[in-house]
Length: 394
Image (cartoon, rainbow, N blue to C red):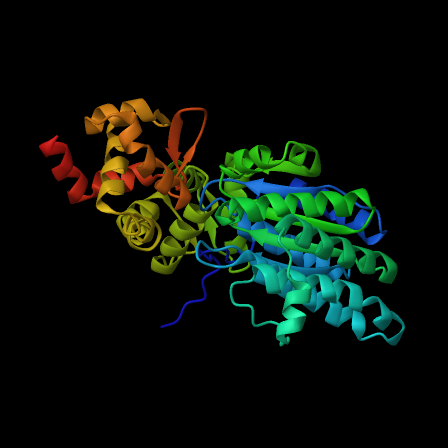
C-alpha cells in the first residue's frame, strides 16, 4: 500500500521544509532586489561537502529570482561536459526572451555575434549555428577570455537597456576546466565594472575556494563566499519535525536526539533516515525504538545509493589511496602519512591524489592535508570487505 512520505532524500531534491538556510536565503533575496534595480552586486559561491544541501539552496534561490522577473538559467557542470556550449545556449535563451518585444530587437545583433564567435571557436560540438566557411573564419577567435568577456558585456548591456537582469546558477563548479573558470571570472569582472546587472550564484565542493583564488587575485572581491555545513541541533530538529507535522506525526525528544546523533546534522542523512523511519512506522508518535529498528536499513541505503556510486568510480590504485587515508585513523590527514601507509614516496602517489581531487572524492583542507568530500565516507570504507582484506595484508 502506498504511503505518502514527507521526506525527500535525493540529489538536489527540494525537501518539503528547508531548515537552517533562512539567513542565506534572505540575504541573497536582498541582492536580487538590487539587481532588479539595475544595481550590479557581488556574485556568491556556496561551498560544502556532498549532502549538505548546496543544490537545494541554489534551486530555491532560482525560484525566488524568477519570481522577481530576473532572467535565470541553471547550469550543472559535468566532468565530461562542455561549459562553453552551455553558457552560449543560456545566453541565446536570454536574447530570445528579449527579442519578443519589438522595441528591443535592434539590441540583439551585437550579443548574437559575440555568442557566434564564442561557439565557433570554443564549442567542440560547433553545431549551434549554421555558418558558411567564410562566416566561420570571420567569427573565429584565439582567446577564450576575450570571447566570453564579449558575450557577458554585450548581454549585460542588453540586460541593462531592457531592464532585464540576468542570474546564472552554476552547480558543481569544481568540474570546470581551469581556463574556463579563469575566463568566466574575467568576463564577470568586466561586466560588473561597466555596471551591468549580471550575477552568478554558484555551488561546489570546498576546493573551489582555492581554484578561484589561484585563477584570479581579484576573485575574492568579485564573489561572496559562504560555506554550507551540517545543521545545528535546533535546525536539525526542525528538519526532522516540520515535514511530519502536516500528517499529525510527532517525535519524542529521545527520538530526535538519536536521529541527530546518527546523522550528525547532515541534511541528506536526516532526510534519508527519517524517510525510512516514517515508511516503516505506523504510530502517530515516533520513538527512539523506531529509530533503532531502522538503523540497519538506513546504512544499507546509504552504502548502496550514496557511497558506493562514488567508490566504484575509483581505480584500484585510487581505492588503495583511500584505504590508506582511512588507516591514518584521524582525518584530515597529510599526504606524507598516506605515503607511509602505502609504503611509497609522496611524489609517486601525488598523481593519484590529483585524480581523486579531480573526481571530487577528496579535497585539500590545508596545504598538505586531505579529507573526503562525502560525510561519513570513512565508516563506509571500514565496512567494506576489500578494506578489511587490505588491512590484513598491510
